[in-house]
Length: 137
Image (cartoon, rainbow, N blue to C red):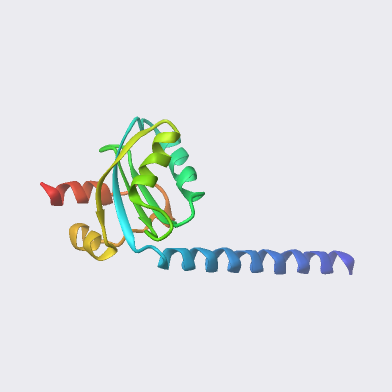
């Protein structure tokens, strides 16, 4: 009987934790009112992109981050009331990657340029920066 109660308690805790996690990320994602395109040097491997993602994930106001190592660009969705694009570039530089703001857009402008919405929550490398670069040429 105690095993069943313990198992039930663990399942309930896991479900509630997942719901809280999802709710938190949905709330954050809706807070992004700006998109920064950051030109970033020094990214050479998956570990570099994970280091950048981890650093930005801890920054209040950052809703999404997509890393493209091939062309050295980061696309960051953020709340410009909480942090500026220049501050984001400074954070990236502070962890060993030279970074500067290439462009700042609204989410709508970003979608018009790339034909897609910023979706950094999914993780992994993205096509967004490549699409952005093609649209600028």
